[in-house]
Image: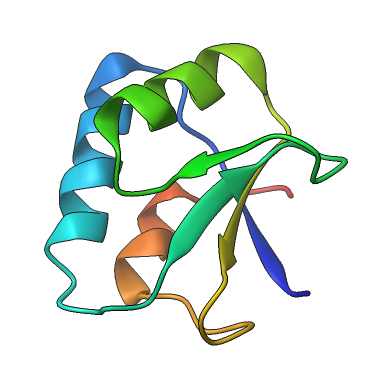
Length: 83
């Protein structure tokens, strides 16, 4: 499973991420997982992503459950400079 590390450290970045994910036009199913991949939330849910940003810390990963390894271009904006 390919995953993209993301960083969402403010409420503003959480809102921007969810809006970007919901407006990318894809029907793929995306989740955000913790480092171990045990806990996950929908990447299109504001409350889910807000929860993940507060609980997962710097170990948040976006996973495409529909097409492994395929991510929308908008995700690049939320990737840390030094993963």
